[in-house]
Length: 136
Image (cartoon, rainbow, N blue to C red; front, side, top):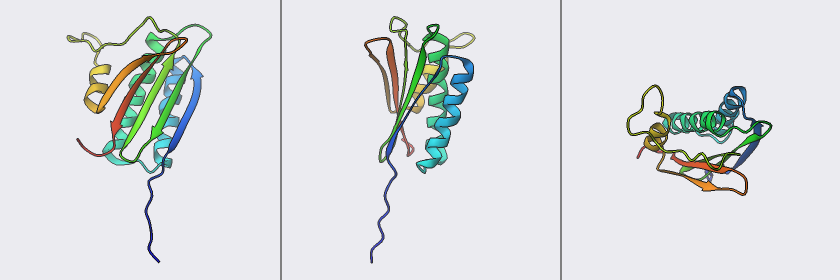
């Protein structure tokens, strides 16, 4: 009998308070989900960094009092798509050409993701990134 290997796929979604604690929890739970999907090595490290940066930005720049942010991850055959949605649609992220004391986060996301962007929502925005699981 022939054995087949399949890649675990799926979707992971959670809502968290738009606080520093919520951002840390998003990273920890996201890393746990990556491990459950069998994502390891440099792909897991890249996805963790992207998730941590997008969660931090959602809390720092997208926070609206009393509103949560949402984390969504989808596992594909050769990538993980990470989405962070917040309630501040008017605050669009853009990498800083000359970062001072900060501003490196989106440069890191751009370096680790094969593509990233922002899409509008009825309330707020979603910042997304596609992280390849194999070196580019």
